[in-house]
Length: 151
Image (cartoon, rainbow, N blue to C red; front, side, top):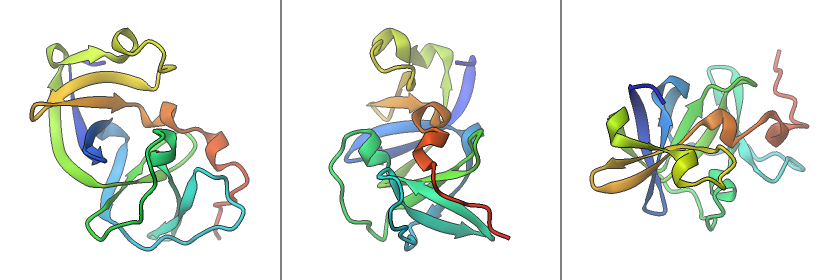
């Protein structure tokens, strides 16, 4: 991890997670998703952002958390990945934080069996924050079969 980086901290079921600010396009209020019959299980639905169709991936499934109905106070994080934009639905945005290298710990050292998904671990408001690389957390295989090219 760089010596100092900005991260967006969010929660799922009272656990804090973070994504690099560099990987985030925007954060929007939860909106109704367009459901896609026969989509991969990880795909919750689609949203339309300015004419761009973006798959919303179920981060709860990736983290093996119980599913729950969307709430009006939920947020959608739209992220940039090498295979195009994707979105995730989160419970709450805690804030933007700058972690210095002395405030974080290497994820591979602390959680060696996490296959490189956890980039690091930090502390925010006295809570442990798991820092993820969205491009390693999800891949093009997660959205295979969706044709998102809209003319």
